Image (cartoon, rainbow, N blue to C red):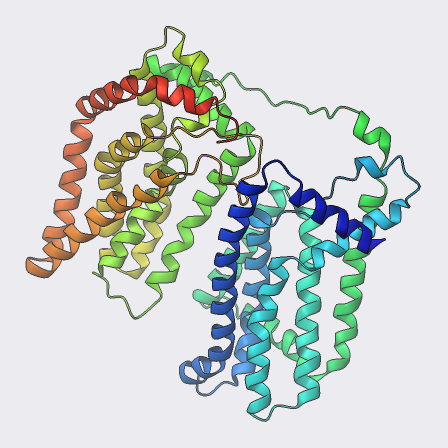
Length: 489
């Protein structure tokens, strides 16, 4: 039966009317997947020697076990946003003499060959090979590796349970931050204690049974959940949702942009893709930890300008680069009404301004790494406000591809064109080059003041810049409307 289901899925893919587009995306994603797996394999082969150099007094295997808790929580966090659940179109099978248990087992079995399950395999197989060459017992290493595979499968099935649950996402994010904070500030050596539990899987391989049982439990929970919901009546019943409505009275104080701002806030909160962009933007505030904790970058490195632009302007990039494609479903209707285009763009800019201020405030704790970190983030926030907001709105006038807001953000290429790749050059390239030149030839202080001054001047001239961009949108209005009407774009 599994072979038959796989054959039907294969035929469905190749007989699809959008085969060309789907196949092109699959090939592109395949190249990225190969690159990522190759990087993980090289990392797994080199991690033993790196840990041996960084922590010469600690067994590298002990160190790896200590960091496994971060691996598990980070993988859960990643899968929440990125992993698509392998749900086949089972409605045609419900009227046929096929056991519902077979359908359920097939859906769950397909998830075991997910790309995300290969991440840990490609990392830990080379690591285990290095352990064997270094004289570690083959039986202990092999069973420890099987325990890691079992934990990975458990994460896979746990993701089925918590997927699309915002509370679970917040809990996982809080645990990840909490573990890091407890270790970073020497409050409690949580990774050491949890690492000892994982190391027990190596010292006493009999505990492999416990991880296998945990996989079985998560599989059984998912099986019962799906099996009890596979009914033909379920597909006939219309899905009803309790809508949490809000009139957003507080926005009325903002004058002529209030109606547009209300629409944007409702659009963000009620749709999958835009809501995901918000959560991703908030999560990216942790991106600075990757650079600030590395000794390779000094406190005045140009790479920290990249980090500052990225962290304070992440929503500007995620949301702003698809303006006005977010409104593509009803953009032609809006343009046929007596709606001032200037107010429409001003509301978009206002929303991005608020996001930059919020992200900067969230980045203030990076002052822990020195006053230079705070100064760079502040100047980058000002630069984003005055320069990058007009740039992103300018490039938005070139967007002509429709976006379906109801679809997930995972592997979704709707609205993506060459514009999205080109816009990164002025957003990051100009401030980094400017900072590098001034920092090298003059001083760090002058470089920071220049970025801040450009931001202040740009913000002071925002009305003139918005007028120019409005005329550009007005000139391209009909081309954008025609592009948004093409549903296969």
